[in-house]
Amino acid sequence: MNRPENIPRPAPIPGVRRLIAVASGKGGVGKSTTAANLCVALARQGAAVGLMDADIYGPNVPIMMGVNETPDMDANGGILPLERHNVKMISLGFITEAGAPVIWRGPMLAKMVTQFLRDVSWAPLDFLVIDLPPGTGDVQLTLIQSARLDGAVIVTTPQSVALEDVRRGIRMFNTVDVPVIGIVENMSAYICDKCNTRTDIFGQGGGRKMAAEYGVPLLGEIPLDLRIRRAGDTGAPITAADPESPVSRRYDEIASSVRKAAGG
Image 1 (tube, rainbow, N blue to C red):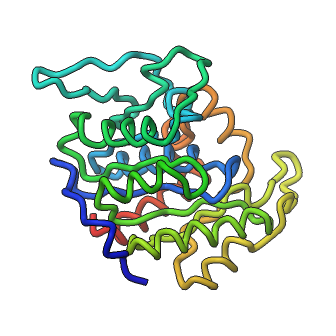
Image 2: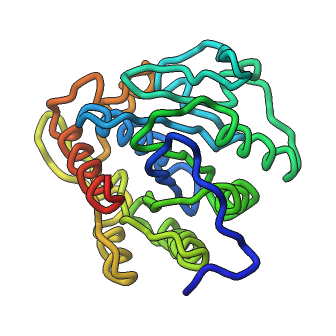
């Protein structure tokens, strides 16, 4: 399906070569964890990477990336992104008081997303990864109208209720002519540390089935691993905290697939 004629092609972000959205149909599937680890993995592969936290109502990037500072301004009035783990980043969580609720209508959300895209001194970047809120709402529409996305990564868990929401996300990107790079199945199984037994808590094979249904790659299956949760809670994604771990290697493979698909 082609991009609707009433949605114009926006101008590129100066100094940013590729824009990649990380999206999910529903909350709680590990989208921000995926975005953070994807960014660190890309940076470890030598790319210049930025992470834009577009989840305005629930900004988790500050915690996951271990940053609790307020951005400065450059000489031209642009916002200087903060940097950790060789990733530049911006988040509403850097600006608002910790724990303060964001009670905004659509126009305010749109203004903040546009400001994060256009008023942050991102350049030079090979990849700007955009951590979207779940669903297909105002932020997604603003992003599509404001930026030329080079691709989208869809994050899901294996169970049916999550997969139905994935369909909506894929169809949204298809409608606006944004290529879906592939699907990441998160929480695919729990592997016991002591006995190495696999337990499919959320079912099995859902991401692979969805990828086959829409003809897109399954980029990777990330297991339920306590080390991922602990790393994110302490501000060092597992790709930074334990880069040689089996899970980090899976994120490395996902990052390589994203680079190849996006022409980076």
